[in-house]
Length: 516
Ligand SMILES: NC(=O)C1=CN([C@@H]2O[C@H](COP(=O)(O)OP(=O)(O)OC[C@H]3O[C@@H](n4cnc5c(N)ncnc54)[C@H](OP(=O)(O)O)[C@@H]3O)[C@@H](O)[C@H]2O)[C@@H](O)CC1
Ligand SMILES: [K+]
Image 1: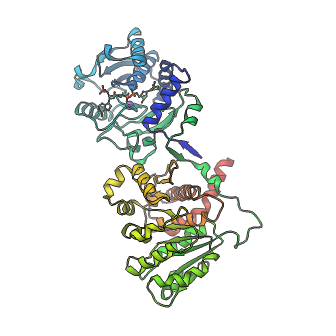
Image 2: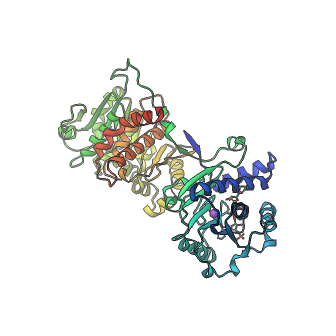
Image 3: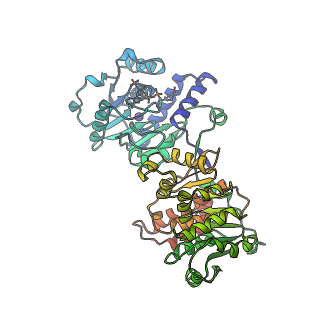
Protein backbone atom coordinates (compact mmCIF):
# COMPACT_ATOMS: atom_id res chain seq x y z
CA UNK A 1 0.00 0.00 0.00
CA UNK A 2 2.79 2.40 0.99
CA UNK A 3 6.19 1.85 -0.66
CA UNK A 4 9.16 3.37 1.21
CA UNK A 5 10.88 5.97 -0.97
CA UNK A 6 14.03 7.14 0.83
CA UNK A 7 15.75 10.37 -0.01
CA UNK A 8 19.47 9.96 -0.78
CA UNK A 9 20.25 11.07 2.79
CA UNK A 10 17.84 8.53 4.29
CA UNK A 11 19.30 5.80 2.07
CA UNK A 12 22.83 6.69 3.12
CA UNK A 13 21.72 6.52 6.77
CA UNK A 14 20.16 3.07 6.24
CA UNK A 15 23.37 1.86 4.56
CA UNK A 16 25.39 3.21 7.48
CA UNK A 17 23.08 1.70 10.13
CA UNK A 18 23.25 -1.70 8.44
CA UNK A 19 27.02 -1.52 8.60
CA UNK A 20 27.58 0.14 11.99
CA UNK A 21 24.67 -1.21 14.05
CA UNK A 22 24.00 -4.59 12.46
CA UNK A 23 27.57 -5.38 11.50
CA UNK A 24 26.87 -6.05 7.83
CA UNK A 25 30.12 -5.77 5.95
CA UNK A 26 30.06 -2.80 3.52
CA UNK A 27 32.11 -4.84 1.05
CA UNK A 28 29.36 -7.45 1.08
CA UNK A 29 26.63 -4.86 0.43
CA UNK A 30 28.64 -3.63 -2.53
CA UNK A 31 29.12 -7.18 -3.78
CA UNK A 32 25.38 -7.79 -3.42
CA UNK A 33 24.61 -4.56 -5.29
CA UNK A 34 26.92 -5.49 -8.14
CA UNK A 35 25.56 -9.06 -8.37
CA UNK A 36 22.01 -7.70 -8.52
CA UNK A 37 23.11 -5.21 -11.18
CA UNK A 38 24.65 -8.07 -13.17
CA UNK A 39 21.39 -10.00 -13.10
CA UNK A 40 19.43 -6.95 -14.20
CA UNK A 41 21.89 -6.39 -17.04
CA UNK A 42 21.54 -10.01 -18.17
CA UNK A 43 17.76 -9.68 -18.06
CA UNK A 44 17.73 -6.44 -19.98
CA UNK A 45 20.58 -6.95 -22.45
CA UNK A 46 21.02 -10.69 -22.74
CA UNK A 47 24.26 -12.65 -22.90
CA UNK A 48 27.48 -10.71 -22.32
CA UNK A 49 29.68 -13.23 -24.13
CA UNK A 50 31.96 -11.39 -26.58
CA UNK A 51 30.25 -8.02 -25.98
CA UNK A 52 32.23 -4.84 -25.46
CA UNK A 53 31.56 -2.57 -22.48
CA UNK A 54 32.87 0.69 -21.09
CA UNK A 55 32.29 1.20 -17.37
CA UNK A 56 32.43 4.75 -15.99
CA UNK A 57 33.43 4.95 -12.32
CA UNK A 58 33.22 8.23 -10.37
CA UNK A 59 34.87 9.03 -7.06
CA UNK A 60 32.48 7.60 -4.45
CA UNK A 61 30.95 4.22 -3.64
CA UNK A 62 28.89 4.24 -6.84
CA UNK A 63 32.30 3.62 -8.43
CA UNK A 64 32.76 0.64 -6.12
CA UNK A 65 29.60 -0.94 -7.54
CA UNK A 66 31.01 -0.23 -11.01
CA UNK A 67 34.39 -1.89 -10.24
CA UNK A 68 32.65 -4.99 -8.90
CA UNK A 69 30.22 -5.16 -11.84
CA UNK A 70 33.11 -4.78 -14.31
CA UNK A 71 34.71 -7.88 -12.75
CA UNK A 72 31.47 -9.89 -13.00
CA UNK A 73 30.92 -8.78 -16.60
CA UNK A 74 34.46 -9.85 -17.49
CA UNK A 75 33.78 -13.24 -15.92
CA UNK A 76 30.69 -13.53 -18.12
CA UNK A 77 32.81 -13.13 -21.27
CA UNK A 78 32.49 -9.38 -21.93
CA UNK A 79 35.47 -7.24 -23.04
CA UNK A 80 35.36 -4.53 -20.41
CA UNK A 81 37.30 -1.32 -19.92
CA UNK A 82 36.85 0.75 -16.77
CA UNK A 83 37.35 4.53 -16.89
CA UNK A 84 37.75 5.83 -13.34
CA UNK A 85 37.76 9.41 -12.13
CA UNK A 86 40.30 9.31 -9.30
CA UNK A 87 43.82 7.93 -9.15
CA UNK A 88 43.66 4.31 -7.98
CA UNK A 89 45.40 4.98 -4.66
CA UNK A 90 42.82 7.66 -3.80
CA UNK A 91 39.91 5.21 -3.54
CA UNK A 92 39.20 4.10 0.01
CA UNK A 93 37.48 1.36 2.02
CA UNK A 94 35.01 -0.94 0.23
CA UNK A 95 35.48 0.86 -3.08
CA UNK A 96 39.27 0.37 -2.86
CA UNK A 97 38.64 -3.31 -2.06
CA UNK A 98 36.51 -3.85 -5.17
CA UNK A 99 38.98 -1.85 -7.26
CA UNK A 100 41.69 -4.20 -6.01
CA UNK A 101 39.60 -7.26 -6.98
CA UNK A 102 39.19 -5.78 -10.46
CA UNK A 103 42.96 -5.26 -10.64
CA UNK A 104 43.63 -8.79 -9.39
CA UNK A 105 41.41 -10.22 -12.11
CA UNK A 106 43.07 -8.05 -14.76
CA UNK A 107 40.12 -5.92 -15.71
CA UNK A 108 41.62 -3.07 -17.81
CA UNK A 109 41.44 0.23 -15.89
CA UNK A 110 42.26 3.67 -17.24
CA UNK A 111 42.12 7.06 -15.51
CA UNK A 112 39.12 8.93 -16.97
CA UNK A 113 40.48 12.53 -16.92
CA UNK A 114 43.54 11.34 -18.87
CA UNK A 115 41.57 9.45 -21.49
CA UNK A 116 40.43 10.98 -24.77
CA UNK A 117 36.85 9.77 -25.05
CA UNK A 118 36.86 10.45 -28.79
CA UNK A 119 38.99 7.28 -29.10
CA UNK A 120 36.08 5.16 -27.89
CA UNK A 121 34.43 3.19 -30.64
CA UNK A 122 30.84 2.29 -29.96
CA UNK A 123 30.76 -0.32 -27.19
CA UNK A 124 27.75 -2.60 -26.86
CA UNK A 125 27.22 -1.51 -23.27
CA UNK A 126 28.01 1.62 -21.29
CA UNK A 127 27.76 1.38 -17.50
CA UNK A 128 27.18 4.58 -15.51
CA UNK A 129 28.83 4.36 -12.10
CA UNK A 130 29.79 8.04 -11.95
CA UNK A 131 27.45 9.44 -9.29
CA UNK A 132 25.00 7.78 -6.92
CA UNK A 133 23.24 8.94 -3.79
CA UNK A 134 26.22 11.12 -2.80
CA UNK A 135 25.53 13.54 -5.65
CA UNK A 136 24.69 17.04 -4.45
CA UNK A 137 24.06 20.36 -6.17
CA UNK A 138 24.77 20.85 -9.85
CA UNK A 139 27.20 19.05 -12.12
CA UNK A 140 30.55 20.66 -12.78
CA UNK A 141 31.84 20.98 -16.34
CA UNK A 142 33.92 17.81 -16.20
CA UNK A 143 30.96 15.62 -15.21
CA UNK A 144 28.70 17.41 -17.67
CA UNK A 145 31.14 16.57 -20.48
CA UNK A 146 31.36 12.90 -19.44
CA UNK A 147 27.60 12.60 -19.15
CA UNK A 148 27.04 14.25 -22.53
CA UNK A 149 29.54 11.80 -23.99
CA UNK A 150 27.70 8.83 -22.43
CA UNK A 151 24.44 10.16 -23.90
CA UNK A 152 26.02 10.46 -27.35
CA UNK A 153 27.24 6.86 -27.08
CA UNK A 154 23.73 5.91 -25.99
CA UNK A 155 22.54 6.33 -29.56
CA UNK A 156 24.34 3.07 -30.39
CA UNK A 157 25.05 1.48 -27.03
CA UNK A 158 22.92 0.08 -24.22
CA UNK A 159 23.29 2.46 -21.27
CA UNK A 160 22.94 0.92 -17.83
CA UNK A 161 22.84 3.13 -14.71
CA UNK A 162 23.88 1.96 -11.27
CA UNK A 163 21.56 3.08 -8.46
CA UNK A 164 20.57 6.38 -10.10
CA UNK A 165 21.40 7.88 -13.49
CA UNK A 166 24.27 10.29 -12.85
CA UNK A 167 23.07 13.88 -12.71
CA UNK A 168 19.55 13.05 -11.52
CA UNK A 169 18.62 14.73 -8.27
CA UNK A 170 17.58 11.88 -5.96
CA UNK A 171 15.03 14.10 -4.16
CA UNK A 172 13.23 15.72 -7.08
CA UNK A 173 14.07 13.51 -10.06
CA UNK A 174 15.22 16.56 -12.02
CA UNK A 175 18.43 16.59 -14.13
CA UNK A 176 21.13 18.92 -12.80
CA UNK A 177 21.04 20.35 -15.48
CA UNK A 178 21.84 17.27 -17.55
CA UNK A 179 21.85 13.58 -16.64
CA UNK A 180 22.62 10.16 -18.06
CA UNK A 181 19.80 8.85 -20.20
CA UNK A 182 19.80 5.17 -19.32
CA UNK A 183 18.03 2.30 -21.02
CA UNK A 184 17.78 0.62 -17.63
CA UNK A 185 18.64 1.45 -14.03
CA UNK A 186 19.30 -1.01 -11.22
CA UNK A 187 18.61 0.79 -7.95
CA UNK A 188 19.63 -0.74 -4.68
CA UNK A 189 17.41 -1.60 -1.70
CA UNK A 190 14.64 0.95 -2.45
CA UNK A 191 13.73 3.36 -5.22
CA UNK A 192 15.07 6.75 -4.19
CA UNK A 193 12.19 9.21 -4.17
CA UNK A 194 13.46 11.07 -7.26
CA UNK A 195 13.31 7.84 -9.27
CA UNK A 196 9.58 7.62 -8.55
CA UNK A 197 8.93 11.06 -10.01
CA UNK A 198 7.82 11.62 -13.61
CA UNK A 199 10.67 14.12 -14.06
CA UNK A 200 13.27 11.33 -13.94
CA UNK A 201 11.37 8.96 -16.23
CA UNK A 202 13.14 9.99 -19.48
CA UNK A 203 16.50 9.26 -17.81
CA UNK A 204 15.86 6.11 -15.80
CA UNK A 205 14.69 3.71 -18.53
CA UNK A 206 13.40 0.44 -17.09
CA UNK A 207 13.72 0.71 -13.33
CA UNK A 208 14.68 -2.38 -11.34
CA UNK A 209 14.58 -2.15 -7.56
CA UNK A 210 16.82 -4.87 -6.10
CA UNK A 211 17.35 -5.95 -2.55
CA UNK A 212 20.99 -5.99 -1.41
CA UNK A 213 20.51 -7.46 2.06
CA UNK A 214 19.81 -4.47 4.31
CA UNK A 215 17.99 -5.72 7.42
CA UNK A 216 14.27 -4.81 7.27
CA UNK A 217 14.51 -3.34 10.76
CA UNK A 218 16.80 -0.60 9.52
CA UNK A 219 14.06 1.08 7.48
CA UNK A 220 11.31 0.16 9.96
CA UNK A 221 13.15 1.81 12.85
CA UNK A 222 13.85 5.00 10.90
CA UNK A 223 10.93 5.36 8.47
CA UNK A 224 11.45 7.50 5.41
CA UNK A 225 9.79 10.85 4.84
CA UNK A 226 8.17 9.72 1.56
CA UNK A 227 6.04 6.73 0.58
CA UNK A 228 4.77 5.77 -2.87
CA UNK A 229 1.17 4.61 -3.25
CA UNK A 230 0.40 1.34 -4.96
CA UNK A 231 -2.73 -0.55 -5.95
CA UNK A 232 -3.25 -1.92 -2.45
CA UNK A 233 -4.46 1.53 -1.35
CA UNK A 234 -7.72 0.63 -3.13
CA UNK A 235 -8.40 -1.88 -0.37
CA UNK A 236 -9.16 1.07 1.92
CA UNK A 237 -12.43 1.51 0.03
CA UNK A 238 -15.09 -0.08 2.24
CA UNK A 239 -16.71 -3.07 0.53
CA UNK A 240 -20.34 -2.18 -0.19
CA UNK A 241 -22.76 -3.95 2.16
CA UNK A 242 -26.00 -5.32 0.71
CA UNK A 243 -28.09 -3.53 3.33
CA UNK A 244 -26.62 -0.12 2.46
CA UNK A 245 -29.18 2.56 1.62
CA UNK A 246 -28.75 5.99 0.10
CA UNK A 247 -28.98 7.65 3.48
CA UNK A 248 -26.06 5.67 4.88
CA UNK A 249 -23.93 5.84 1.73
CA UNK A 250 -23.15 9.49 2.41
CA UNK A 251 -24.58 12.79 1.27
CA UNK A 252 -22.09 15.14 -0.37
CA UNK A 253 -22.78 18.84 -0.76
CA UNK A 254 -21.02 20.71 -3.57
CA UNK A 255 -20.91 24.47 -3.00
CA UNK A 256 -19.99 26.42 -6.10
CA UNK A 257 -21.00 27.61 -9.52
CA UNK A 258 -21.54 31.13 -10.75
CA UNK A 259 -22.62 32.82 -13.94
CA UNK A 260 -20.87 31.08 -16.86
CA UNK A 261 -19.23 28.58 -14.45
CA UNK A 262 -21.85 25.97 -13.72
CA UNK A 263 -19.98 23.06 -15.36
CA UNK A 264 -17.36 22.78 -12.59
CA UNK A 265 -19.75 22.05 -9.68
CA UNK A 266 -21.71 19.70 -11.94
CA UNK A 267 -18.51 17.72 -12.61
CA UNK A 268 -17.64 17.69 -8.91
CA UNK A 269 -21.10 16.25 -8.28
CA UNK A 270 -20.45 13.53 -10.88
CA UNK A 271 -17.12 12.74 -9.18
CA UNK A 272 -18.96 12.31 -5.86
CA UNK A 273 -21.71 10.15 -7.38
CA UNK A 274 -19.24 7.95 -9.24
CA UNK A 275 -17.23 7.75 -6.03
CA UNK A 276 -20.18 6.02 -4.43
CA UNK A 277 -21.97 8.82 -2.57
CA UNK A 278 -25.61 7.91 -1.88
CA UNK A 279 -26.82 11.47 -2.46
CA UNK A 280 -25.28 14.57 -3.99
CA UNK A 281 -26.61 18.12 -3.78
CA UNK A 282 -25.26 21.33 -5.30
CA UNK A 283 -25.80 24.58 -3.40
CA UNK A 284 -25.74 27.57 -5.76
CA UNK A 285 -27.34 31.03 -6.04
CA UNK A 286 -31.01 30.34 -6.81
CA UNK A 287 -31.14 31.77 -10.34
CA UNK A 288 -28.46 29.29 -11.49
CA UNK A 289 -29.95 26.14 -9.95
CA UNK A 290 -31.55 24.67 -13.08
CA UNK A 291 -28.45 25.49 -15.17
CA UNK A 292 -26.11 23.63 -12.78
CA UNK A 293 -28.42 20.62 -12.67
CA UNK A 294 -28.35 20.53 -16.46
CA UNK A 295 -31.03 17.87 -16.57
CA UNK A 296 -29.12 15.38 -14.39
CA UNK A 297 -31.88 13.57 -12.53
CA UNK A 298 -29.48 12.19 -9.94
CA UNK A 299 -28.05 15.57 -8.89
CA UNK A 300 -30.16 17.55 -6.44
CA UNK A 301 -29.88 21.30 -6.02
CA UNK A 302 -30.20 23.59 -3.04
CA UNK A 303 -31.00 27.05 -4.47
CA UNK A 304 -29.69 29.81 -2.20
CA UNK A 305 -31.86 32.93 -2.44
CA UNK A 306 -33.28 33.98 -5.76
CA UNK A 307 -30.47 35.98 -7.35
CA UNK A 308 -27.55 34.83 -9.49
CA UNK A 309 -24.66 36.02 -7.27
CA UNK A 310 -22.90 34.87 -4.13
CA UNK A 311 -22.94 37.05 -1.02
CA UNK A 312 -22.00 36.61 2.63
CA UNK A 313 -25.64 36.54 3.67
CA UNK A 314 -26.33 33.37 1.61
CA UNK A 315 -24.72 31.41 4.43
CA UNK A 316 -27.95 31.92 6.36
CA UNK A 317 -29.83 30.04 3.67
CA UNK A 318 -27.26 27.23 3.66
CA UNK A 319 -26.17 26.63 7.26
CA UNK A 320 -29.54 25.29 8.54
CA UNK A 321 -29.06 22.39 6.08
CA UNK A 322 -25.55 21.40 7.20
CA UNK A 323 -26.68 18.51 9.35
CA UNK A 324 -28.03 16.72 6.25
CA UNK A 325 -24.55 16.51 4.72
CA UNK A 326 -21.63 14.26 5.57
CA UNK A 327 -19.09 16.31 3.65
CA UNK A 328 -18.76 19.43 1.54
CA UNK A 329 -16.71 20.34 -1.53
CA UNK A 330 -16.45 24.10 -1.85
CA UNK A 331 -14.95 26.12 -4.67
CA UNK A 332 -15.61 24.65 -8.15
CA UNK A 333 -16.92 27.52 -10.28
CA UNK A 334 -17.45 29.68 -7.16
CA UNK A 335 -16.11 32.74 -8.98
CA UNK A 336 -13.77 35.50 -7.92
CA UNK A 337 -15.95 38.47 -7.14
CA UNK A 338 -16.12 39.90 -3.65
CA UNK A 339 -19.50 38.24 -3.10
CA UNK A 340 -17.93 34.79 -3.43
CA UNK A 341 -15.13 35.86 -1.07
CA UNK A 342 -17.63 37.07 1.52
CA UNK A 343 -19.56 33.83 1.22
CA UNK A 344 -16.40 31.76 1.68
CA UNK A 345 -15.40 33.78 4.73
CA UNK A 346 -18.84 33.22 6.24
CA UNK A 347 -18.73 29.50 5.36
CA UNK A 348 -15.34 28.93 6.97
CA UNK A 349 -16.38 30.81 10.11
CA UNK A 350 -19.50 28.65 10.47
CA UNK A 351 -19.65 25.21 12.07
CA UNK A 352 -19.56 23.15 8.85
CA UNK A 353 -19.13 19.50 7.81
CA UNK A 354 -15.67 18.16 6.80
CA UNK A 355 -14.71 20.14 3.72
CA UNK A 356 -12.64 19.79 0.55
CA UNK A 357 -11.47 23.22 -0.60
CA UNK A 358 -10.81 23.48 -4.32
CA UNK A 359 -10.56 25.87 -7.28
CA UNK A 360 -11.87 29.41 -6.63
CA UNK A 361 -12.03 28.78 -2.90
CA UNK A 362 -8.24 28.24 -3.07
CA UNK A 363 -7.95 31.53 -4.93
CA UNK A 364 -9.57 33.26 -1.96
CA UNK A 365 -7.39 31.42 0.55
CA UNK A 366 -4.40 32.88 -1.28
CA UNK A 367 -5.86 36.37 -1.45
CA UNK A 368 -7.71 36.75 1.82
CA UNK A 369 -6.04 36.22 5.22
CA UNK A 370 -9.45 36.12 6.93
CA UNK A 371 -10.32 32.93 5.04
CA UNK A 372 -7.07 31.26 6.14
CA UNK A 373 -7.71 32.02 9.82
CA UNK A 374 -10.72 29.71 9.93
CA UNK A 375 -9.30 26.60 8.29
CA UNK A 376 -9.54 23.52 10.49
CA UNK A 377 -7.73 20.19 10.52
CA UNK A 378 -10.66 18.45 8.81
CA UNK A 379 -10.18 20.60 5.69
CA UNK A 380 -8.49 19.16 2.62
CA UNK A 381 -6.89 21.57 0.14
CA UNK A 382 -6.38 20.41 -3.45
CA UNK A 383 -4.26 22.94 -5.41
CA UNK A 384 -2.84 22.40 -8.90
CA UNK A 385 0.55 24.04 -9.64
CA UNK A 386 -0.97 27.42 -10.56
CA UNK A 387 -3.06 27.48 -7.40
CA UNK A 388 -0.09 26.35 -5.31
CA UNK A 389 2.04 29.12 -6.81
CA UNK A 390 -0.60 31.65 -5.76
CA UNK A 391 -0.94 30.14 -2.27
CA UNK A 392 2.85 30.27 -1.76
CA UNK A 393 3.43 33.55 -3.61
CA UNK A 394 5.95 31.93 -5.92
CA UNK A 395 6.11 31.42 -9.67
CA UNK A 396 4.77 28.27 -11.30
CA UNK A 397 8.31 27.35 -12.22
CA UNK A 398 9.55 27.71 -8.63
CA UNK A 399 6.83 25.49 -7.18
CA UNK A 400 7.41 22.84 -9.82
CA UNK A 401 11.18 22.77 -9.21
CA UNK A 402 10.83 21.27 -5.75
CA UNK A 403 7.29 20.06 -5.33
CA UNK A 404 7.75 18.05 -2.09
CA UNK A 405 9.43 20.94 -0.25
CA UNK A 406 6.78 23.39 -1.46
CA UNK A 407 3.96 21.12 -0.31
CA UNK A 408 5.61 20.49 3.04
CA UNK A 409 5.85 24.23 3.66
CA UNK A 410 2.25 24.82 2.56
CA UNK A 411 0.97 22.13 4.93
CA UNK A 412 2.98 23.75 7.70
CA UNK A 413 1.41 27.12 6.88
CA UNK A 414 -2.20 25.95 6.48
CA UNK A 415 -2.17 23.04 8.98
CA UNK A 416 -4.47 20.93 6.77
CA UNK A 417 -4.26 17.81 4.65
CA UNK A 418 -3.16 18.93 1.19
CA UNK A 419 -2.94 17.46 -2.28
CA UNK A 420 -0.48 18.97 -4.76
CA UNK A 421 -1.88 17.89 -8.10
CA UNK A 422 0.20 17.18 -11.19
CA UNK A 423 2.23 14.28 -12.56
CA UNK A 424 2.93 12.23 -9.41
CA UNK A 425 0.40 14.04 -7.27
CA UNK A 426 1.70 14.53 -3.72
CA UNK A 427 -0.32 14.27 -0.54
CA UNK A 428 0.56 15.05 3.03
CA UNK A 429 -0.75 16.42 6.33
CA UNK A 430 0.91 18.11 9.31
CA UNK A 431 3.60 15.87 10.85
CA UNK A 432 2.87 13.04 8.43
CA UNK A 433 5.03 11.54 5.67
CA UNK A 434 4.62 12.63 2.08
CA UNK A 435 2.66 10.21 -0.12
CA UNK A 436 3.48 10.11 -3.83
CA UNK A 437 1.13 8.84 -6.52
CA UNK A 438 2.97 6.69 -9.07
CA UNK A 439 0.67 7.98 -11.81
CA UNK A 440 1.61 10.56 -14.42
CA UNK A 441 -1.05 10.30 -17.11
CA UNK A 442 -1.73 12.79 -19.91
CA UNK A 443 -5.39 11.72 -20.04
CA UNK A 444 -5.88 13.53 -16.73
CA UNK A 445 -4.63 16.82 -18.19
CA UNK A 446 -8.09 18.12 -19.07
CA UNK A 447 -10.41 20.77 -17.70
CA UNK A 448 -12.74 19.28 -15.13
CA UNK A 449 -10.44 16.46 -13.96
CA UNK A 450 -9.70 18.44 -10.78
CA UNK A 451 -13.39 19.02 -10.09
CA UNK A 452 -13.98 15.29 -10.35
CA UNK A 453 -11.12 14.59 -7.95
CA UNK A 454 -12.54 17.07 -5.44
CA UNK A 455 -15.97 15.43 -5.65
CA UNK A 456 -14.44 11.97 -5.32
CA UNK A 457 -12.45 12.91 -2.22
CA UNK A 458 -15.60 14.54 -0.87
CA UNK A 459 -17.48 11.27 -1.23
CA UNK A 460 -14.67 9.33 0.49
CA UNK A 461 -14.85 11.67 3.49
CA UNK A 462 -18.15 9.99 4.31
CA UNK A 463 -16.45 6.77 5.32
CA UNK A 464 -14.44 6.02 8.41
CA UNK A 465 -11.23 7.02 6.62
CA UNK A 466 -9.06 9.83 7.97
CA UNK A 467 -8.70 12.93 5.75
CA UNK A 468 -5.24 11.69 4.74
CA UNK A 469 -6.40 8.15 3.92
CA UNK A 470 -9.43 9.41 1.96
CA UNK A 471 -7.18 11.74 0.02
CA UNK A 472 -4.56 9.09 -0.80
CA UNK A 473 -7.29 6.68 -1.91
CA UNK A 474 -9.05 9.37 -3.98
CA UNK A 475 -5.87 10.47 -5.73
CA UNK A 476 -4.82 6.92 -6.61
CA UNK A 477 -8.32 5.92 -7.71
CA UNK A 478 -8.69 9.02 -9.91
CA UNK A 479 -5.21 8.42 -11.41
CA UNK A 480 -5.97 4.80 -12.13
CA UNK A 481 -9.16 5.88 -13.92
CA UNK A 482 -6.94 8.09 -16.10
CA UNK A 483 -4.78 5.04 -16.88
CA UNK A 484 -7.89 3.12 -17.96
CA UNK A 485 -8.86 6.00 -20.24
CA UNK A 486 -5.36 5.94 -21.71
CA UNK A 487 -6.04 2.38 -22.91
CA UNK A 488 -9.17 3.60 -24.68
CA UNK A 489 -7.77 6.96 -25.83
CA UNK A 490 -3.98 6.63 -26.20
CA UNK A 491 -3.87 10.01 -27.92
CA UNK A 492 -6.11 11.68 -25.29
CA UNK A 493 -9.34 13.36 -26.32
CA UNK A 494 -11.32 11.86 -23.44
CA UNK A 495 -13.79 14.12 -21.64
CA UNK A 496 -13.96 14.82 -17.93
CA UNK A 497 -17.38 13.19 -17.77
CA UNK A 498 -15.81 9.97 -19.07
CA UNK A 499 -13.23 10.18 -16.30
CA UNK A 500 -16.06 10.28 -13.77
CA UNK A 501 -17.95 7.49 -15.51
CA UNK A 502 -14.99 5.12 -15.52
CA UNK A 503 -14.26 5.54 -11.79
CA UNK A 504 -16.39 2.59 -10.60
CA UNK A 505 -14.74 0.33 -13.17
CA UNK A 506 -11.35 0.76 -11.50
CA UNK A 507 -12.38 -1.69 -8.79
CA UNK A 508 -13.68 -4.14 -11.35
CA UNK A 509 -10.39 -3.94 -13.31
CA UNK A 510 -8.21 -4.38 -10.26
CA UNK A 511 -10.41 -7.14 -8.90
CA UNK A 512 -10.19 -8.96 -12.26
CA UNK A 513 -6.43 -8.40 -12.30
CA UNK A 514 -6.12 -9.85 -8.80
CA UNK A 515 -8.28 -12.86 -9.53
CA UNK A 516 -6.31 -13.84 -12.70
N1 LIG B 1 28.26 1.05 1.72
C1 LIG B 1 27.32 1.76 1.16
O1 LIG B 1 26.97 2.82 1.68
C2 LIG B 1 26.78 1.31 -0.13
C3 LIG B 1 26.67 2.20 -1.19
N2 LIG B 1 26.35 1.79 -2.41
C4 LIG B 1 26.60 2.65 -3.54
O2 LIG B 1 27.25 3.83 -3.14
C5 LIG B 1 26.57 4.98 -3.62
C6 LIG B 1 26.71 6.10 -2.68
O3 LIG B 1 28.06 6.30 -2.49
P1 LIG B 1 28.66 7.71 -2.04
O4 LIG B 1 27.95 8.18 -0.84
O5 LIG B 1 30.11 7.52 -1.92
O6 LIG B 1 28.27 8.69 -3.21
P2 LIG B 1 28.59 8.70 -4.78
O7 LIG B 1 27.39 9.27 -5.40
O8 LIG B 1 29.13 7.46 -5.30
O9 LIG B 1 29.80 9.75 -4.91
C7 LIG B 1 29.83 10.92 -4.15
C8 LIG B 1 30.96 11.78 -4.70
O10 LIG B 1 30.53 12.38 -5.90
C9 LIG B 1 31.12 13.64 -6.03
N3 LIG B 1 30.10 14.65 -6.23
C10 LIG B 1 29.01 14.90 -5.47
N4 LIG B 1 28.31 15.92 -5.98
C11 LIG B 1 28.95 16.30 -7.10
C12 LIG B 1 28.71 17.31 -8.06
N5 LIG B 1 27.67 18.14 -7.97
N6 LIG B 1 29.57 17.43 -9.09
C13 LIG B 1 30.64 16.61 -9.18
N7 LIG B 1 30.92 15.64 -8.28
C14 LIG B 1 30.09 15.50 -7.27
C15 LIG B 1 31.91 13.91 -4.78
O11 LIG B 1 33.23 13.53 -5.06
P3 LIG B 1 34.50 14.47 -4.87
O12 LIG B 1 34.20 15.69 -5.70
O13 LIG B 1 34.51 14.75 -3.41
O14 LIG B 1 35.61 13.68 -5.38
C16 LIG B 1 31.30 12.94 -3.80
O15 LIG B 1 32.21 12.54 -2.80
C17 LIG B 1 25.17 4.51 -3.83
O16 LIG B 1 24.49 5.30 -4.79
C18 LIG B 1 25.37 3.08 -4.27
O17 LIG B 1 25.65 3.06 -5.67
C19 LIG B 1 25.98 0.39 -2.67
O18 LIG B 1 27.14 -0.26 -3.08
C20 LIG B 1 25.44 -0.27 -1.45
C21 LIG B 1 26.36 -0.10 -0.27
K1 LIG C 1 25.11 6.24 -11.43
